Amino acid sequence: MPSTDVSEAQANHDWLDALEQQLSPGSVLRPGRDDLDAYETEWRGRYHSHALAVIRPDSTDALSQVVKACTQAGVAMVAQGGNTGLVGGAVTRGDREEVIIQLGRMKAIRRVDDASALMVVEAGVPVSVAQDEALAHGLRLAVDLASSQSATIGGILATNAGGVLTIAYGNARAQVLGIEAVLADGQIFNGLSEVRKDNTGYSMKDLLVGSEGTLGFITAASLSLVPAPKVSATAWVGVESVDQALALLKVIRQDMSDHLRAFELIPALAVDLVSKARAEQGLSTRVILDSASPWQVLIATDSSDEKAPLEERLMESLMAVYEAGGLDDVVVAQSQADAEAMWVIRESISDAQQIEGVALKHDISVPTPLFGEFIEATEKGLLEIVPGIRLCAFGHLADGNLHFNLVPPEGKPKALIEHEAAIEDYVFDQVAHYHGSMAAEHGVGMLRRDALAKRSDAGKLWMMRQIKQALDPKGLFNPGKIL
Ligand SMILES: Cc1cc2nc3c(=O)[nH]c(=O)nc-3n(C[C@H](O)[C@H](O)[C@H](O)COP(=O)(O)OP(=O)(O)OC[C@H]3O[C@@H](n4cnc5c(N)ncnc54)[C@H](O)[C@@H]3O)c2cc1C
Image (cartoon, protein in one colour):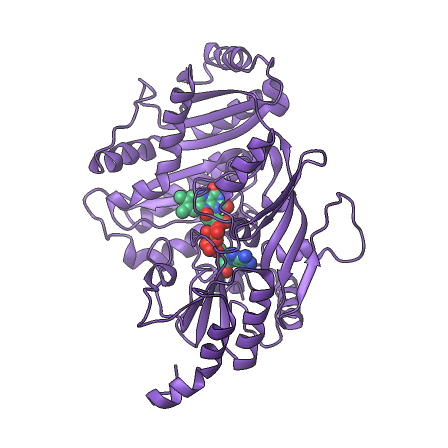
């Protein structure tokens, strides 16, 4: 904040006092009076800076009022949902006056339409709550991620989140029929379409989805739903290499056709880190495989046809691959508890890496058939930068998307910090060489902004800047993120 004079600063914030008077009680949290820390700190603790206020509107009209007031005062606005984003998009930058607009009070599920298989839901609804509501209607919201309990509908749309169901249903964008949003001048975009076909000019919903709060604040969405699963089968498989996992994927895709829901690659190191980290928290972790396969795969299938013999088909398919020498070991879950024990491991990987010190994380995609070659070549290059560096690449192999994470050499928890820039450059050079993406599903935020500016196609950057200028001419919506 440029001003050092307290009374002048106070006077400058009269607009905020007035706004607070107009909004419903509890809408404005102020430093000194309220504890803002949880809103100001990014989920991983990597970014923290102070906000002028945290504003929690309880309706679209209230948000419109907030945006108008902030725009008039020239104060920047950062949208925040569950604050689970991994690229520093939902917190302030600390280089100017900014308010955080937290959408958690906009939590109504406006309606679920069984006949049309859709729901209209507000931005602050946690994903898991929307999932449960859909299930209560015999339907499924086809987005699922390890952060579903905290991540919000607004957040998953603003980041076009992926997750474990992308292989079957696509990213969050694929579920969207319509969007309601508040635009940079405070006007409301009433785009809550419920139809599946609408070619009336540019698709503004598609522009807002994935724009990370830089073009408009999403207040509600109409989302298309799919039939809820009635049966499922889950397996954990050990393989020798990523190429072997890819060969297995090909077979499972053919044999299980449209029932494949998740195919998650997990390195043995991740399994070790999870059991170690959970043990520190006093939690036990099921040992799934007897063999020490270097790579493992979690496979999930399901069907809305309760008679579909998924378990038999999955078992048959896996045994055929096993007998042909295409995998080391396999365990098919015999109960819901078995399946849950497998998912606990997968969903604990993100957090567990911290136990070995400061890990470096990259969310990348590469054309799926090239992943084995990419990993082998990139690991070799990384070992030349930091001898002993350990690869913890895990995630959505079937989408060609892995969380390409790097864990420090054993006993050297801070060994990667001084090499962060060199490592990032090298990994992204490799991604470019293999024609992949350096930001596959988490987005750009603050974390990848400079890398995007350096590496993006010039034409794409030009179009993005034109769009930003047109929709947010004063640059007050999440400044310094993406661009
Ligand atoms: C354990 C864990 C696992 C994860 N797994 C996955 C995964 O598998 N796939 C994946 O894609 N991501 C994953 N993530 C990342 C994160 O959960 C997603 O990016 C999620 O979409 C963020 O939702 P949120 O509500 O927390 O948004 P926030 O973190 O609050 O915000 C994210 C971005 O969206 C903007 N934003 C938020 N709400 C709005 C709104 N209403 N209107 C406009 N802009 C808004 C923010 O300004 C910010 O730029 C994971 C995170 C964790 C912690």
